Image (cartoon, rainbow, N blue to C red; front, side, top):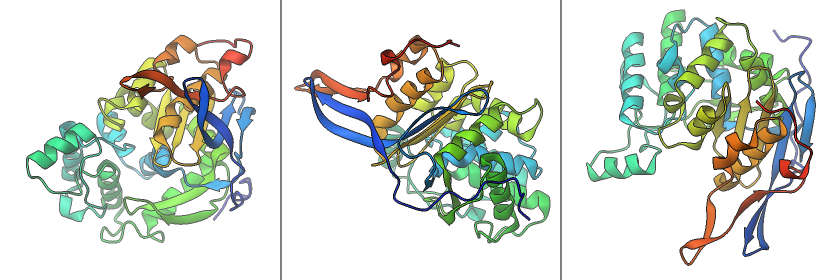
Amino acid sequence: MYSSSLADAPAVREPLHAPVAHLIRGGVIEGIHYGSVVVLGADGEVDFQLGDIEAAFYPRSALKPVQAVAMARAGLPLDGDLLSLTAASHSGEEHHLAGTRRILELAGVTEDDLRNVPDLPYDPVVRDAWVRDGRLPSRLAQNCSGKHAAMLYTCKLNGWPLENYLDPAHPLQTAIAEIVEDLTGQHIAQVTVDGCGAPLFAVSLHGLARAAARITTAAPGTPEARVADAMREHAEMASGSGRDVAALMRAVPGLLAKDGFEGVQVAALPDGRAIAVKIADGADRARIPVAAAALARAGVAPEALAEFAGEPLLGGGRPVGSVRPVRALDPLTRPSHTHV
């Protein structure tokens, strides 16, 4: 069942995280975010690492592009905006809801067949409007509904049962697990349940970066390339209109990027350069500044990343500080590399 070329599962242990970002107020370090960072070169080798890139961890929604590849390999015929939505942690905007309905219609199923957890839209503005209108939490509005609709569609196409499609022993989930191992290059360390109810697989941060690189360097027309093209061309469908991960893909040509709860970010360029970030305390405010610094380490032009330096820290309504990557990660402390 398993390829002999796969590396052993990463160790389940307390990760040896290191400081990756400082919260600086008025020139004083007020707080420290710990975490881990890995940067892969185009040759697949580790160019930079900080913290613990080999311990088992849960990538959360940063694994969705891999899950989408698995479904595409299993015959899911979606492309473009609907394939991007398959890999999305969407904001709950109307185009996300409409896209999910389209996938359900193609599958010949309804919202009642979804098994994700009912929720309000993820985007705060959209969520506030939803509540003002008196709308209740729904499975359609929950940020993983596109993935779940695509899972149902994949099951229908393969003649697999629908009612238990989230069971780790279900044919869909075993197929996804095999592709997770294939693309990360390692055995899965642990299986649990993600927030939406789907199986969640523990791999290493190194393995997550490797998977992203495998997806962006795949030959045109392959399931991997289809997913990468869809997410890059329809970045707002994979996230949301005001989301930083969509802005990051627009700012850096050819970049594939996906975020995940608990401070996870993965990104890869078409030549295989890739980064993966885990913020230990799950703080979202450190995720993008650290990821931007890692991308600069990978050779992305700093001017393309200027808007991702992080939101200013306010005092009395005016900027008095910011979250900054630690000196070991900050590309301004090293010689310049080739830029894209």
